[in-house]
Image 1 (cartoon, rainbow, N blue to C red):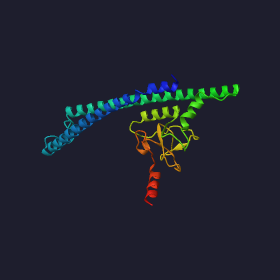
Image 2 (image 1 turned 90 degrees about the vertical axis):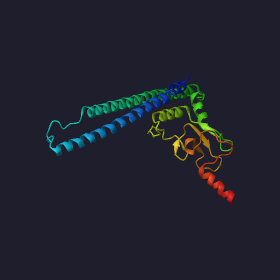
Image 3 (image 1 turned 60 degrees about the vertical axis):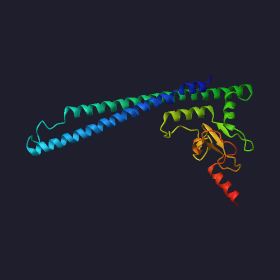
Image 4 (image 1 turned 180 degrees about the horizontal axis):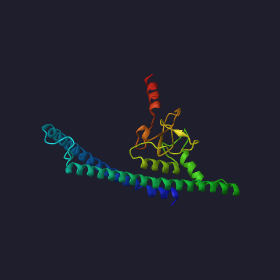
Length: 240
């Protein structure tokens, strides 16, 4: 098993772990909101009762009797305990993702070392580096415009990086991940290659490759597929 395959196997369980923690967070949040509403209503009523007693002359404004009931204070302490549990769960989720990111950094370092080793061997022996470097190139290239594939997968390293990014942001937020400035960009989002991508069948398409998520695809399209820009051009031509 390669180090990339090992990382992918280790990260497979991460989304489920995060899902469970976020489900617990949602449950705790609902419970906290209920306790807070109940406490607010109780405190408002007790404050109103205090005001009425002061107006009636039963207690003075500086009386030690002017304080919230034990029930109200207990509810506030309960709310604090729930909030502490939420913070602990969020910290656990963060640590879980952080551990996988550190592991990914180690694997990417190994990947670079292996590529360097392949190049050094190629220089010494005078033969091209074929193992890792060619595997990476074959994962990127796809086919030319004339007979290109409908879909393609990103390189192993890019796919692993994208997997970690998605797992780390289940809510869909973007992360500022380090990107090779020489890495070509694609799609309407102008991002690097990752995951599965689809090629526009217009040979003159300016962008050519698109991420599934950016164009609303979940699987390989059947027949010819055109991006939104090229689809509009095709309709105009047919309308003439």
